[in-house]
Amino acid sequence: MTIFPAVLLLAATQVGPADANALPPLPAPAPAEADVPKPGPRASGFTAPLADEARFDACMDTATDDPKTGIVAANEWLIAGGGYFARHCLGFAYSKEGRWAAAADAFVDAARDAELARDKRAANLWTQAGNAMLATGDADKALTYFDAALAQGVAQGLLLGELHLDRARALVVAGQTDAAEIALAEAHKLAPEDPLAWLLSATLARRLGKLERAQADIDIAARLAPRDPEVALEAGNIAASAGKYDVARRNWTQAIEIRPEGPIARTARGHLSELDRAEAETAETTAKP
Image 1 (spheres, rainbow, N blue to C red):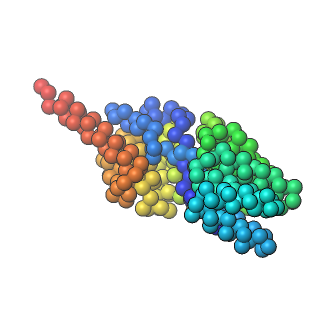
Image 2: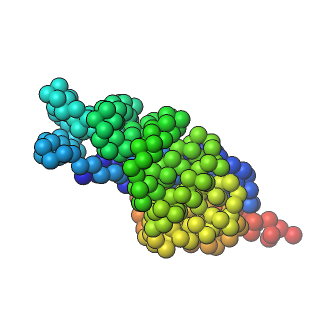
Image 3: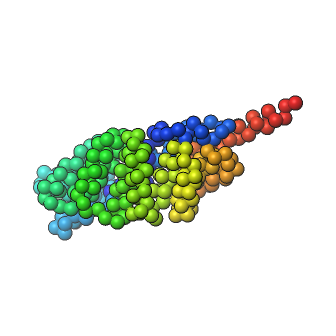
């Protein structure tokens, strides 16, 4: 059973000089809903012990269908001795309501209890706490929780790669871009087929003005997720930053075609409108004697 939606986004925080160089003579795309990945929670599995599995699943199902009822159910189970399994369900229920600070607190309590019980699930719970805290915008606390997850020493392979990706997101929000690039490199080594990791590194590289790296990374993301509108949007942003406006137009149009409604399409339409205006102004200036 997954704990969070799978889509994770970097914060729309100014992290480098790229925007000052992007889209000449167009103004650089302002940080918008879908221009740069924003903070959000990640998916992560969790399996309760056999004795508690049925109640854990029931609690999670309740929280999924009706978060308010899920909060009540989790608290009742906690009072009855549900321990960190009940706290985990409580954190999930809070997250379904968007109550990220409360969710983080519940996950932290669950992680600490799991540590006391020498349960390896503590690593997963610290990760959940980090993602919930990152959703509040507190990158420093999120990093503390992600580091606590790493310190458990149990994450390996793909899960370790995803944890490095989570840390990279928090590092970007914290303004630690050098460390974020290192964390993303680790994520690429351990989770090379994760298109989100390549999308995030491409976005970060663009914002730092490293357009060759950005292009290389977005090409990989596009190969892994050819129908992802976020990838198409960022491919357009990178092309525009390099002055390749025809390519940018094609990619922004594709982003809209893939998913016509929502923030990504709105951002793409905004970029296309700016491009249209700039081209019209250029044509008007050229036509003057």
